[in-house]
Image (cartoon, rainbow, N blue to C red; front, top):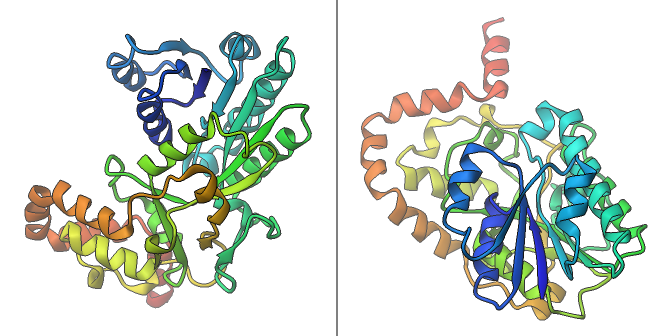
Length: 325
């Protein structure tokens, strides 16, 4: 089986690459040539064909797609960069996907396409958190990334290709534990269902030779044992880090509607792909082991760290300004 994986050195891409290397596949990877990616590539150059290029360049894409059986397209510009630079993100996310579809359709033997979309395409689900793949797609007005993913889905559905679309949930990884300002964008009442990035990699790899997936839109999420409220998730994580949730007032977080996430039905994807291994508790325990040393220092400087995080919340700044007036 000849497979092309785009975005191989991103979070989900690396998990997928590591899983695919356990199979007897002819693997080609396509990614942008950055210093970080070149460093990561050293480990894999003996086992895979590395193709450096830009999704926005059709010639690059056409060469990468040539003679492949299956394309796994996970490369994307994600938030917060996708929201800060929406035109750039659209040129990569939508323009790049259009190039892939066109290049695939121009092959003598058309490859099959596996595409990763996002839970963000459903928009706000605070009042109705259980999401099925047949639910209305309603990206939030200010969510450029979600709107771009939706455009990509339409491009793919309207193509002449065999395709499968996987809408990914809230993906967690031990390699991405940095506190991001996006943490304040999610209302504390939000229902979330995590999925370990390693399970996503397994799902995508198991999809390659599964004939049941084509023409399907499915959710990739962790299952019942990975569900929690964002408030409880944050309390647990901040305690593990030694920061403490009590130091972050509710005024620091978005209130009410305007974000996304929820509990995603995965009966079909799990039946087809058998990928759900890691639970929420597994993730919390793994994080505890990873940060056991840094937690000691964080606790020493706890007030400073809390103040640093609060400074990342524009909601808290607005609250303070209104309070002063």
